Image (cartoon, rainbow, N blue to C red; front, side, top):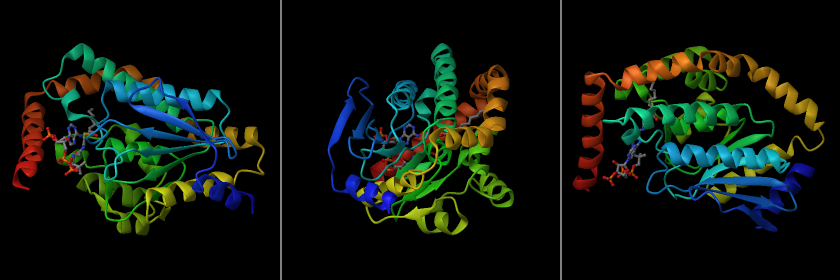
Length: 281
Ligand SMILES: CCCCCC/C=C\CC(=O)SCCNC(=O)CCNC(=O)[C@H](O)C(C)(C)COP(=O)(O)OP(=O)(O)OC[C@H]1O[C@@H](n2cnc3c(N)ncnc32)[C@H](O)[C@@H]1OP(=O)(O)O
């Protein structure tokens, strides 16, 4: 089968071509034989989504769209973290101008990934909370390595996931499951995520996850690319349009939320907890 051959080629190392080194926080490698691009996040230690990583992600997505790649596989250079979600330091005691640029960029990057015309898949090779889960659920397919967690834990930080975070989550989970998980701020283990359908497959390693993502992308090999892409766009149009129409309000809501003293206090305690955890070990 064609898609199995594609995934084998990719797994075998194939003739990869690094097409982008300009962006320091992401790399794009295209396999010359399969035409599939691997977009790797590389912002140690946890791929926290700050303004610069979001900018690099957006320009890498644009690059992949522009070079006619057959698909995009999103992954991480860290062996244990896909992405720790939004960089909390962008929201804690923020400079409001930067904060505005940060949230606008998050909107921009999400619109590009969720609305991407190429087939997208996430090789989730580590923990994937909150914004990390948003990136993964914005792709069309998810393969995750065991012993990690994924979910939208915003309520645990005293925050409410915006409607478009929910849209991506709801494009994957049934409403009842999504609502309960969001209300609880639940983080799913790899096995739990597979059971509820938050991920599509598990893999024993990053390489295997990439191979399975490539096999998914290979399933479109015989489908007319324009018909496939327009069908995807049609499915996602309402979600994308909702954010496009409400971008300004969404930004103002975010800026209002982060300027609340109670939220700042909560974020301070949360960050302290993350650091204490480090000291205890
Ligand atoms: C209208 C308003 C709408 C707003 C809605 C949006 C709201 C939220 C969306 C988000 O994405 S908020 C971020 C949520 N993320 C998390 O809660 C994850 C927190 N991190 C962890 O659970 C763990 O760090 C980890 C990802 C499981 C990794 O664990 P590990 O043990 O490997 O690493 P640590 O030692 O915990 O971390 C290393 C280092 O990184 C710092 N760090 C971790 N996560 C973040 C983060 N999201 N932002 C900023 N910094 C982070 C952590 O404090 C450590 O720092 P140092 O001690 O080394 O300085």
